Length: 184
Image (cartoon, rainbow, N blue to C red; front, side, top):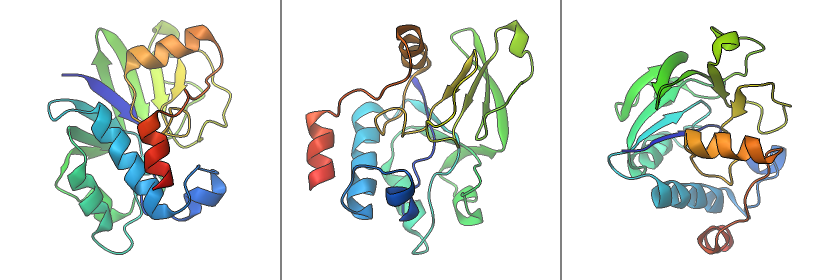
């Protein structure tokens, strides 16, 4: 079992193509590519913490149909664009505004919004967040887990920490399956 983090998928939200300049020719291509990338990485026994802005639910039921295609035990930390219908979906293992968990002995604070300071920030606790779509300069022990930063896919804590040690966040090159999904 692996534990993954992601945020800001914005499934079914046409604004994301223009505002965030995502490299997909249509909203259907966007949604299909993000679903395929999730399925490529996450297995049925894995856990995914989605840190907000999962989907717009238009037409009604679309968000539930997308969620049903995504493997893993899924937890939702609510974002500013998650409608009530998304929050009530029984496919979520949990739904809340904030969580504190530990992964491999590392304590984490999870919220959609980035904090300036957080509980035990001076004691090595890490803040994982979404919301800023890679546009916020991080402070120590703070990481944006949004898909705009991570090549449109969920990531592990080990991957997040390894990239920070190598320098500023840069999305890895798209895989052949990503390029194929985006162009189909």
